[in-house]
Length: 158
Image (tube, rainbow, N blue to C red; front, side, top):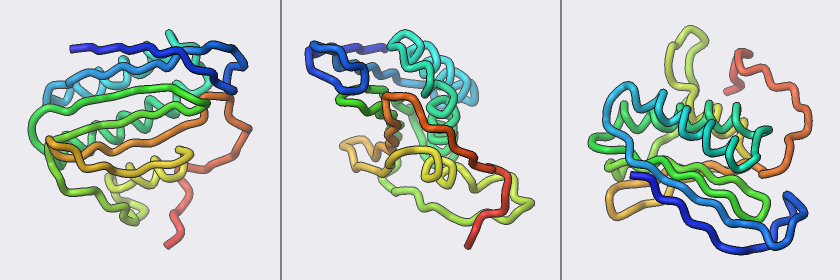
């Protein structure tokens, strides 16, 4: 199920007035294909909204959150995207009320870096309890990123 809403607002990110508040959400099945589906939905929606500069980072972080939800929760997962007031917000809701914790992964570990990526690449992130469980969200600026050099494969500081 796809839901989209639009409300007139002013945004400094595009310099246009009036601009549009954009929001969309989808329920994803609890299968491995859901990560690929979440990436495609994110890519397609952000391209349609004109947020080309944020697509790669948003896709990566959404896939991390959806994969975490599928690994640690049960039932359906909801992906929500919204853009308003110069900020792009992505959230993934699952049916487990337990909030995730960021951990330090060993250099040879195959897992354990998802929230580190979210923390490093997003403007802000957090978790919110919901009636069904929790929603983990992150925000990105809706305007272009400044060039930054981040080595995602460098050893993490303890």
